[in-house]
Image (tube, rainbow, N blue to C red; front, side):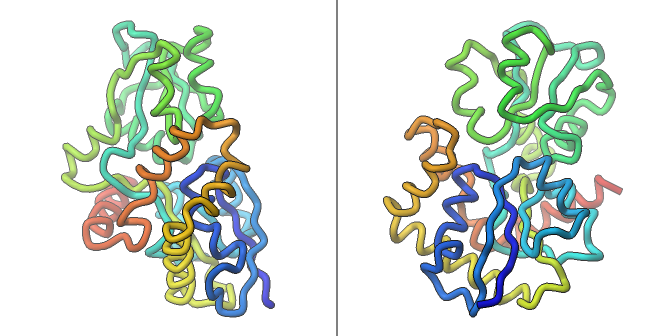
Length: 259
């Protein structure tokens, strides 16, 4: 079998989507996938090294990488109500002066924060899983959270300042482009064949949920079972199978704003 290197995050939506193809549960058209799990900023950095045939990255990064990659229609993360949240300890937010933790420089979360607060300058970049603690410990005044943290922040006594995804949806009337699956142009598989494999993998996971969830659990970093299921339900959706016309329009809007 021919081998393809795959880079994704350990988040449940990625492990759920790619479980079937990683484990040869579906027709992979003669290819075997060697997978590495990295956080989203690390994946964004790896895009430039051309180390992976297939890689999940932030849409902000994907839109700047047209030369070496095909952007696939399946497997990514778009949706309504899936965006990053700006949180703090319940104090009044001062965009000009508050110190804000952002989960990576090249992330969609950073793009959406800048879209809402273009004049905010006092920012630091940190791994997404550390941001709640940075706020709680007073090391920053506020933080932008992503992934499963949107389900846990209130249990820790933190408050939502604004839903950055909701703001995007109100302004653009479209879904939020969060993460894209990129295929190197020099890979031996066509984009359409790769999309077909990913769609088959998603359908397999839905048809064999207990099996797929067991795999997700291995990489879910001690995540509560309910939170893990909420994560999958939110981020694996109709746009995971195909970005569709609404997704195409949202991606075009984002690309125009990046210019």
